[in-house]
Amino acid sequence: FAPQLADGAIMNVLSAISWLATDGAGAYHAAKAAEWALTNSVRLELAHQRTLVTGLHLGAADTDMMAWYDGHKGDPETIVAAALDGLEAHQPEVLADAWSRQVKAWLPEDPSVIYRQAAAALTT
Image (cartoon, rainbow, N blue to C red):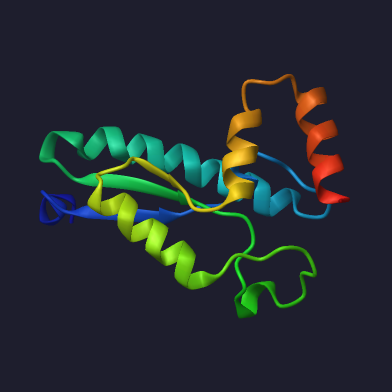
């Protein structure tokens, strides 16, 4: 099916949890981390046919899936708008909310720093 995607686009919905494990979500984190790696690999594999492969990262969105979560949840319409803007701009990665931008910014840090900062952010 890859040739049919030539000059087209794929957007893979990921999560800030691609980069940050959270208590009770180890399997979800591992799956999203693998999905992020796969997105990056597919981007390279399809580049020769000009298929844009974009990873969309976000924290929690105010959807049925996250109804149980009491923390901050982004507006789905805002997230979709960011996704579409990213596709239009041919971005390989879209960080759709403040949480995904913060977690991505922590990546160069030592894990002890990342998890200390994440714990502080999650408890405020």
